[in-house]
Image (cartoon, rainbow, N blue to C red; front, top):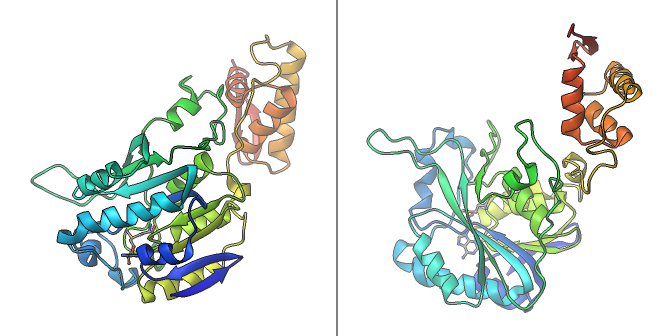
Length: 338
Ligand SMILES: C[S@@+](CC[C@H](N)C(=O)[O-])C[C@H]1O[C@@H](n2cnc3c(N)ncnc32)[C@H](O)[C@@H]1O
């Protein structure tokens, strides 16, 4: 089977069932994220969507509906074998063949962690029934080891939003509202998963240096996100046409390039949380906020800087700025009459 190396990561152009059997050792993968063909005539799938077909890459290999059950059992058995004890697997599935995937999972020792619903935009338009705008994400673990779950990788346990709801709680609810990436005029695979969705799964369920596998690479979106987040990655794509095109795009990704774009969670209680604000602290808040904004910083950056300097949560900083009547406009800071 042909393979290509990208930054020390090996990708295989071939069937994932025989490919994994030949190339991936038992218990070697920390995290599998994968989106198998849906068995619903994926060759024509893109025609339902209101998009320019010239940019959708040909070559998508579909599985016949009649073979879907057996196909699912075979690739999921391989996934179970290569996953390390304690490793996690996320499988994205539409509802049509979901029962085959669930049936295949029940035939393994993999254990359900969550059944997630991913709600997306641009659902298939219908006029005589409801519009389908969700996928299922089956999150399972291989028993026998410690599962990675980075509780505060995205939001600290104490961080609250403007409505005073816990940001960590909201981010970990099992209904995820994440839009598909909008890539007008750029080549894409049918059904490409959004980077935001993949980043979330990778952040919670792996650490830098861990080995991620995608059994059905398609547009290599899992691979690109994993490299960008400084994980190692491997995977399979049976279509030569898709593989050729996407391996070149993947070469352009710099390991770790997505890390600086990630939100920095506030972990642990800020040292001054709950303490009343002194007059001096309020003065510092306003003057330092003006300095950061007027030296070209964004409001978000200024709030983060002040949260760090004053030992308070971001939400507390924003709330006090509002109370002090501080507003920004045109790169300057003003104080409204209270
Ligand atoms: C739903 S797409 C994956 C999309 C991908 N997650 C993305 O974000 O672009 C499924 C892919 O699996 C490929 N495929 C189908 N059968 C396969 C097999 N037996 N082994 C490996 N890849 C296969 C298809 O050609 C298609 O590109």
